[in-house]
Each structure stands twice: as structure tokens, then as C-alpha cells.
Image (cartoon, rainbow, N blue to C red; front, side):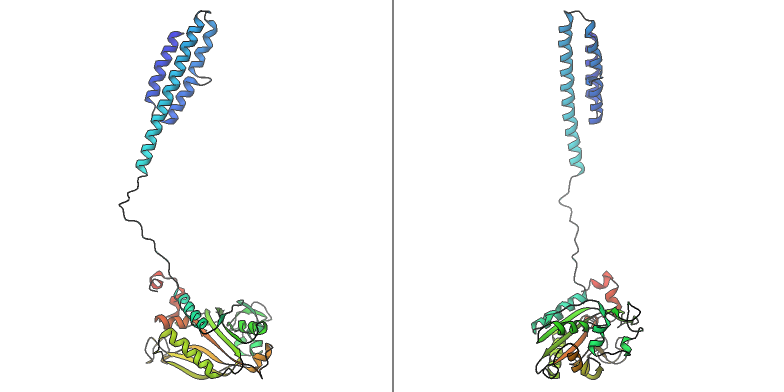
Length: 341
């Protein structure tokens, strides 16, 4: 039995010394010191020894166990240290290598112009009002003096949700004005920016989805001169003191009198090109004095109060602001185009 213990010690020590991984070392521990290991198998033979030999063999067996356990633990520490060194080498960071540049996002040109317009109007004492994009025909048309049969209410121009043309995607942000007139105390001085939808064909200056910024002022003694002064201030603040504008008569059912406001074409300088369709001017907005019937429809006494309203095409403002020649560019998400702004 003594020889068996000595042979086991020599064999196991050699195997432990040559172990090249934690898994192999654990396998050797189970093989030699486990409950069903080789040392346990040798100790089972103790019963066949004489009473004098048992203490001697027991002491020798304990020495062998302790020696093996100590060797296994030392080898484990050695292997773990080697593994740590290998991991550190593989994960080494070269701090001298230039870092990767992180591109910072920028505002979309539409948002840039929208924020500028908001700042301009807030500076003139206006507040921001918002409303739903899905609207009732009553607010989108009827309350704004656009009665049944008007071309603007035709299905060829408007996206309806219901067969009775009762619910639709708003064609303008004017319904916000109606909601405000019904709920807000006078005087009123608001702008209402947002998305609107019309069945327009896509071209250099039109899109079936676009953005409007509409304004409304209701108070005693408001005149057309107030409207013109406000819009002149807007254009000059956006485009500079040299901006050339043109006010011309027009007709809108919700304003009387009404006007269109144009700016000189930024592409051709007024000579005529494809962007302005040869006219030399680009239509920016429609405006006018709020029709007395609109005031009455919203519960405001038209004999006491007057007001003006206007609707600005945000895309057209942005095109003029950044010299963009085609409206479609602002929707295509082309980074080469957007990174310019």
C-alpha cells in the first residue's frame, strides 16, 4: 500500500505540473482526490492492514493528500495569473491611437427657420397655439366661412376619412384659430405652426404634406396697416432689410379684404426661372382682415372687434432663407444636402 501511495504521488505530481488549463487541472483533482478518485480507492484497502500498520499508512495517505491539494492550488494560481496576463495583453488599449470622431447632429433647415419665426413673433408679443392634425370639416371649413360646394372642400383637394366628408386631414392650421377664438379671452395674438395636407402634385414648390405657420390677431381697432407692418417685419427679420416684398389683392373666404404676399425669387432675382415659373416672384403667404362672419361663427362681436390673419408656408420660407431651389430636397433625408445647414 505504501508503494501505491508513492506511485500515486509521483504520477499525480507530474500530471499536475504539466496541466495547461484550469479545466484540465480540475479534472486531475477529481481523478486523484475526488470521492471516487484514486486516493480514495487506495484508502479503501486500509481494512486489510494490521492494527500496527494502519496509523502509519493513514499518516502517509494524509501527507499525500495534503501534498496533492497544495500542488493543485499552487498550479491553479499559476494558471489564473497566466490567463489574466493573456487577457490584459489582448485587451490593451493604445492610448496614442487617434479617437473616432463623433458626428454631432444638426437642426433640419425647416426646424431652423421655424424656430427663427417663433422667436420673431414671440418678440412681437405673440404666443404659440397648437391643434389636432385630424380635424372636423366644421372647424376646417364651415366656421372659417368656407361653405358647402366651395372648391377647397372637394375630394380632389382634401384627404377625407369619412364618406360624409365630416372628418379630414386639416388642409391648413386655420382650425386652430377657430378653436382659440372659441376658448381664449380677448384680445388674441397667436401663431399656430404645424403640418397640413392637400392633394397637391409633387414639384419644385409643392408637396401633399407641408407645414404652415398661421397667425391671428383679434382686438379693438386692428387695421390692415397692422397686418402689413407685422408681415414686413417678419420678412425683414428673416431675410434682411433689403428683402423685396409684394402685396397684391386676392380673395379668401375667411378674410375681407384679402391679399397675397410674395418675395422676389431668390433663384433668378426677379428675372423669371423654373422655380418661380417665370414670374420673378414666389408666393409666400396669404393674409387679410378676418371676415366678420368668421368672428361671429366663433362667438366674437364683429361690431366691436376686428382682426387680421395670415398663413405662411414654412417650406417656402426655408427655401428663400437658404436659397434652396427645389422643395423636394428638404424631404429626401440626403445627408449630403442636409449637412450644409
